[in-house]
Length: 180
Length: 180
Length: 180
Image 1 (cartoon, one colour):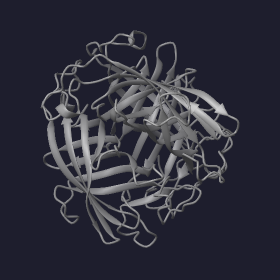
Image 2 (cartoon, chains in turn orange, brown, blue; image 1 turned 60 degrees about the horizontal axis):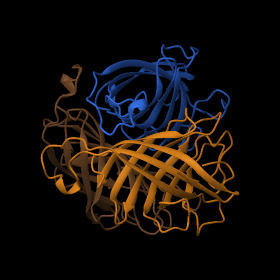
Image 3 (cartoon, helix red, strand yellow; image 1 turned 180 degrees about the vertical axis):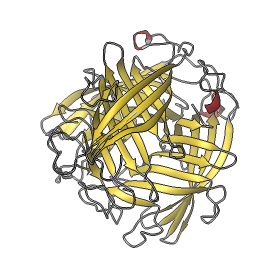
């Protein structure tokens, strides 16, 4: 989620602890024992609106500090920019693979001296394997890879807890980036 | 939370798992066993500021993409609009009932092809029955009813986990809507 | 986080329940038993950008309702203002102490009749004692002190749950405030 890049792919490695009670069991009055964790990897692809790519853009700047605007990320490492996104999720790093869901929410740049972002978003999965949502918040800028907390889930991910690791997988020209 | 509607009522059905340790017990050093869940239903009422209803409005657009403004929800299904709200909560679907609390936080529209919203908000309850807050995040647009995760709580809802289901209960003209 | 104040110090008293599995243990497939809670106190210091203090400011208004702007907090108790911050954390109430980390995220004013704020932010700690992040959301305006939920953690605070209490510790002139 950088300055001039427009398309970025990110990789998200997910470690989930699920409660014993699934969505279909959740009428029961007690939460079951925690199940072993589940590991998953997803890619999502972010194309920031730049004033010219309305058709392809998957995200847009919606907040900016007084010194910024909504088509160009602001100076000072974009401090204060708020971006809303609706990114396709794929299971490989190809933007054009069939999406298994959407990553939807926001991120904001919150550091003046180098890039860091605070994110609040959900993965909405709707494939034969997974149906439900996982909600994330936070982001740990102290590490090269950014750890982010799982704060909730619905459907197959009812009451999920855990952690995800975000990494930038690729930035294509000024036009493309991915997140593992 | 739609295009031309100004007042909307929403219904929130809540399924909570509470830790054994309540607010008054939380000096104890261990979390107790999970208690049976609690089911509750609340209504809240959202009146969006439209440039003319400053006195009655309970919410306002505070962020918009470059193609939007802050008195009219933007095109493309309001993608990128960020709305801050302070809505009265009632236990029936009547806006004029005595509120039992406030629903406060934000929602943002995060899908270009149809309406979906990502929410971060808290219920602040202050009645003879309940005192404390429940904090929610997320929203599952894959279902007709939208599931949203309980991510925390204070007071009577200390350490709450669970899930809530949001439904639009009524939209009154261009002026009113409720959320069950 | 008030009208004319520019620097404010806040005190955050933290009560954490940690899972037995630490960051280094999290390859194991089961969450361990909950460990006794941990109590900590931190101070953080917020200097709001006012159009003139770009060098020292640690926060900036990035969203405002139609009746507001981004250098002066809006009327009606700042309802709708969204502020992004990157505040130093210290272990005493002195802004000039060596920071043990950063508090990063956002708050938004969500009440028209008196000041209340909804916050989403993380503490990023990077000292000899603590390394990791704690993510918070919510805020309980019913009490003088504001309870806020711990919604996740990474590193030393992996899978943390708990509660924090926020208090304004000091507001210095129109220029300074702290949060315990």
